[in-house]
Image 1 (cartoon, one colour):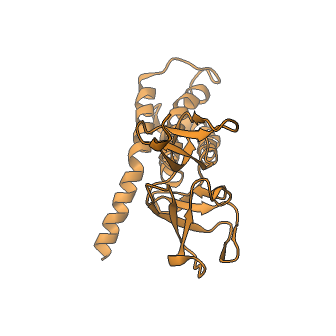
Image 2 (image 1 turned 90 degrees about the vertical axis):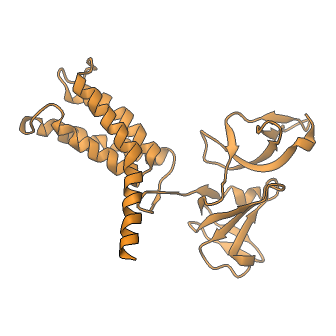
Length: 244
């Protein structure tokens, strides 16, 4: 491999939230890391650039920039720039830092790995609030079934139609899409029809062939997960415009 085709980059893999330093091949777009021995380059499967301008980040651990400054755990910032040649990422911090020029922290691949280890992405919900990421948000979304399934089953005798009680499940998917993000809501939307079929249809605790209305419900769950965050954001923009 011609090393002149490589440039430094900060990357992450799809199954990990940890950022690492690597090398981007300009000819193919693939990302490589250096082998522990021999100085060879090894392809990183599923790797992609970790940052884009506008990404919000938080610090999972404190960063000591002695003697210039100190960043506390939990502080937040936004990616304000990425240098294509050096791969250096500039993070504009929310807090005031007199020791940093323009209140901006720079992280350079292969040079600032200790600082890089303290940074993680901060996802924001449709309401503009920070949300958990990865398995935390997905687990929280799935845990709503512990509430919606019993309510659905208990209210079945008092609500007309087979699909009536599932209203609470649609509400849960809508809440997850806004509070936890679209991916978590989609996972909940895909799992909910099977959970409904096993727990709420007769015979209970058996996976039975789906009835036509269950396909309609599954489409409704997925549709809410995909569209509800955009509708909320559009509503917020409209409200702000009207108030202005």
